[in-house]
Image 1 (cartoon, rainbow, N blue to C red):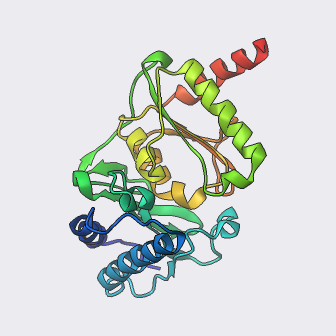
Image 2 (image 1 turned 90 degrees about the vertical axis):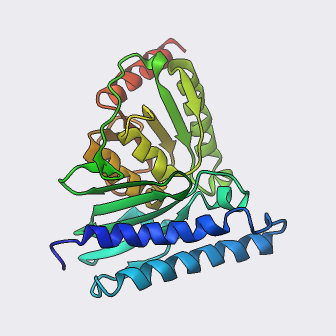
Image 3 (image 1 turned 90 degrees about the horizontal axis):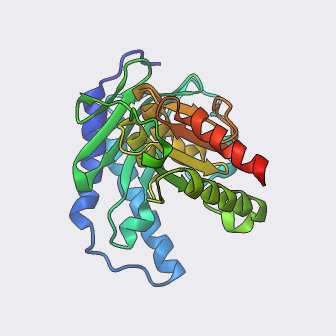
Length: 271
């Protein structure tokens, strides 16, 4: 296990991968069939992994790769190895294929069962978020910190939902109730797309509250470390501290999680 990371090498690799997709953005026809869609998804995965592995394997030959982004059964707990790269080749790939902004290249180093290093690159805005455990979080080299707002009506919240929610009626009901609650208590509610980037935005003070019911660990991991290192609160949607294997996520500016959950609870008591 390598104790020291060559951070510039990792960041350069992620930027190289993202910029390759930026060159091709909006040049490939929007898929019109299921077969065409999955063909493009597989192409994205292979192209991104090839670039990242070629750039990083020489510097980190002993660190294996875990690429099972859609294997939800494996998300309950980290792999039983000391460290590995967890790669979400493109978060927001649907937007990319639909010729819409809002896609990123994400990479996480899992060490001793916890996110140790994470990076998120947004090629369309040339923004690179990254964090290393215990060393803070950064955007293009400058430290970031969450919002200091205290008025829920001034806050921008986002909600997300995991893939496959259409087959889980109870989860859909919980998400619907969550949206109703958010609309009741916060000033503005949005749904943007790339999960990890939105979590990084909480860390940078651009978003005040992120809310998701359901199990979406691999999509969360890069942004979780960045938000946490920036100083954000990382909870479950019922207010507990988030740990790997939890089936919900609430990430907010400091103190906002408790404030929001108290307001939500009072509303439910009146119903």
